Each structure stands twice: as structure tokens, then as C-alpha cells.
Image: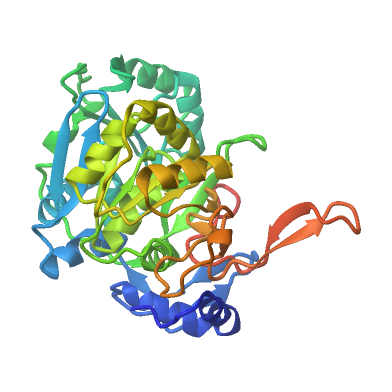
Length: 454
């Protein structure tokens, strides 16, 4: 239970007593060696969170919930808008599949610190691959499944993966697109050579496996299972590339400990979710929202996560929310506009379990938010964050008993704990300018940039 009743009390605690604040937040995580300090400045100017403490993110996201009696609870619920397939995986089943696939990766020579490039659509196997990397201390690098050969080659050369994992196809709408031709083109163009490629065979478009190079994903799942390794809090969990709008795409490096603490806190503080609740994000797992709130945050918090492949229609979102008693829906303004267009032929949604809806990723105009509130008859709010931060810079805080003013609901919210944004005028005396964040950035923000000292 959160110790604050108001936003001001919560935010002031993070500003005035950051060590106490974040060490208390760290109690949501199971540590091998608990942290004794919250933050340490590195020689390069970056900061390590919970330095020298040890843990394993996969254990926190999967194993400990099985140990605590949640083994039979659904961990992941997957729906494909392309193939209409559905799959529900319990925490116990997820533990077995992840441990087995982690053993398969280790048999291919993957160890702590090695990079594993994952180029797959949103699937159960994508989450399994991510968690298996976390289990053995490998660094996963998830990239867009639809990349053409040249773009995929650039990612391969950037991170030098020991193993590449793909699905045999992805989908454009309901049309399958084979993935192996792009992989072959990328490997022909790249200077780096991975030790192995792993392919998830899909019924719509099975691939021919090349001897020696290629391995079947589900066969590797049957490998001897491995236990989670102990990692330092500051050890890297994953690399995720930015969109590259400021030049070449940069690999954001995210740590284990700070990431786990901030995401677990955010589920309770911002989204108002507790263990056993169902959280649904429409984001692709290749994007930061998919990493943070499709996989890690819900699982770290003992929740059930609903994930979808492809663009879900308004009727599909309604059906999934109703069928799985979704408490919190996280989507984009673009998805919301598509829902508004389709909903002209639908009555308002009646979803008793749904408590609130969040949007992020782009501007959400007040008219859109008001439509969504009218259609869903629930609170609908915007919040702001980026790939570099991994969670909200500003948000609305549904975990606090204080009820926020209606006048604030169309804004992007107030700063999350540890974020201290301010505007530096481009021209002296002007009110507008650049938004800057003071150091240290809070837990879960980038621990550095790949190949730039990280």
C-alpha cells in the first residue's frame, strides 16, 4: 500500500528524501542482495541505481509469483488480429517455457552480456525470448519485425548479436510476409556473423531451416531448464533503439535493478493496479511501451498482461476487455481515433471491470479524450514519456486516494517521482523553450547509450 495520500506528499518525498523514497520503492522487488544505497554517480557522469545490489529480473517477473502461489493465474493472454489465434499462458507454464528456452540459448553459446537480437511480431514467443535472455543475463535487442534487409543489417552490425531470433513470417493485415528472405539479405550485407539463428515456425508461412545455422524455437524450448542467474542491479537488461529522428538510431541501454523498481512502483502509483489485475496494452512489443507495459511491468507486479498482434479494431478491444476483465487499457491516440471512426456503428462500451484508460505516444486533443470518456464512460487520460525514460515523465496518479481535478484531465499530468522537468527559454524572456530534466534521472531511465560508454 502506498504511504501517501496526496500527490504533493508523494512528490515532495521523492525530492527531499530520494534515498529513503527509492529504497522503500525497492522493497517491491525480490533481491538476492538487497540495496543499501539508492543512487551512485559514475565517473562518466551517469548514475547507477541500487549499486552493488543483486537480483534477476526474470525471477521477479515469473518465478517468484509461482513460488507465491500464483502459478495457475494467467500471466500472458495473446490475441492475433491477423490469424485470429488466441493463447493463454499461466505463470507456471511461462516459467517452464522460459526456463527451457533459456537452456536452449545457453546451449547455443549465449551467456551473460551477450546480445540476442529479436525481430518478431507481438507473440507469446517474443515475450518468452525476452524473459529467457533476462534469465541468463543476456541482453535482448528487440527490433521491428517488418524491417527490410538493409535496416536489419544495420542493427546486426550495431549490437553484434550472438543469436538472432525471428518468426517465419509477420503479417500486413491478414497477409503473411515471409521473414527469412529479409534475414538472408541482412546477413549477406552485415559484417557481423551471429553464431545461430532461431526461427518460430508459423502455420501461415513455415520456413525451411538451413542446416547448422537455423534452429527451431519450440524445439529449443524443450532444452534442459536453467535457473535465473544473479546479476548486479546496474547490469544491462536490454538495448532498444530510438526512432532515429535526430540522426542514426541510438541504442538506449536499460539496467536491471532500477528498471524493475520503477516499473513495479508505476503499476501501483500511476495505473492503480495490484496483483491479479489485468492490464492491456495495444503496443507492439518492439516499442518501449510494449517492453515496459506489455511484458515487464505487469509481470513484475503479478498482473495478467493482454497483448495483441496487429492493429486491434474497436470491437476487438471491447471484446478482449470484456472477456478478460481488463482493469487498465493503455493505447495510442491514433488507435483511439480509429476506434472513434469504427464506433459510429457501435453503441457505447459497457465494461464493468475497466477502471481507466491511458494514451501516450503523440498528441491527444481534448475532443478525442472527451469522446473516449463518453464512449467508455471511464476516466481517459494522456501521459508523457519516451524510449529514453522507459516510464512516465508526467502522469496522472490513480494509486493515490486523492481525486485529481477534472480540469487537469486533458493535460499530460504532473511530474512522476524523480523527474524534475523545467523549460529553458530559447530566447531570454520567452515562456517557451526546451524541456530539460535534471540529473540524476530516476530509476528505469537510460543507463547510457550503446557504444558510448554504456
